Amino acid sequence: MATERVTGAVTARPTGLGIAGVWMGSLAAVLVRRPPVPGPRHSAGLRHLLLPLAVMEIVTAFLVSSMLPPAVRPAHAVLEVLLVLAGFGLVAALLRHPHEVDAERVVLRTGFLGDVTLPRAAVRTASSAIRTVPGRGPRPVPGEADAVACSVDSSLNAAVHLDPPVRLDLGAAGVVNATTVYTSVDSLPAFSAALRTVGPAPGHPAET
Image (cartoon, rainbow, N blue to C red; front, side, top):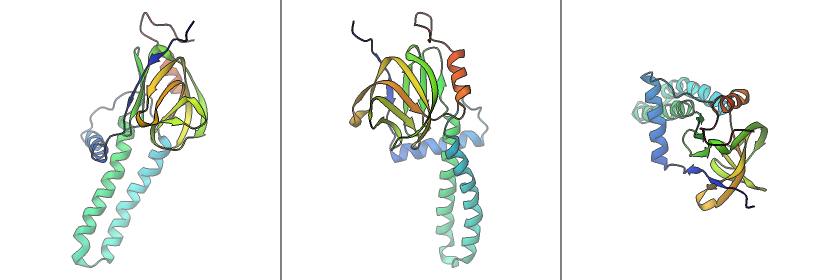
């Protein structure tokens, strides 16, 4: 009997302008206190690195500005504002685009570099998998023909196991019939609990 295969979806990386739009939209949502989207969060390491750097940039900007000639201070101020907004916007994008688990699908998000959507019925379990996969966003895994990685940076800490395999079209990188998707999660127990709590929709096989 042929192995059953199902199809998932891959959202490609936006253009540079599209990424900037996601950052600014996410930052605006934080500033107006729009309720965050529920779901398991990811990319804690990158958030914890960037947030202090953005705060330090504000302090450094004032110090540098005081040493610059008055004629160049306006241009420097504009540059610093853009840098700080980009830093806070990136962090906001990660916070406001968590993974999503419901009865129909599991969406593994990067925040602003593309997503991988998996049929809920094909997602079996998640396990710890500390590893590095070069690149960013949805991408193939070197040396693993049946694996895909989806993260905002090269560091991953979780493996989502699929049965039956899920067909994922990675564009120029080709098509992968994935049995594993590596991703980043802030809390593997919380992510696994979400999978257990929200089972497949009626009519689909239950998780094993």
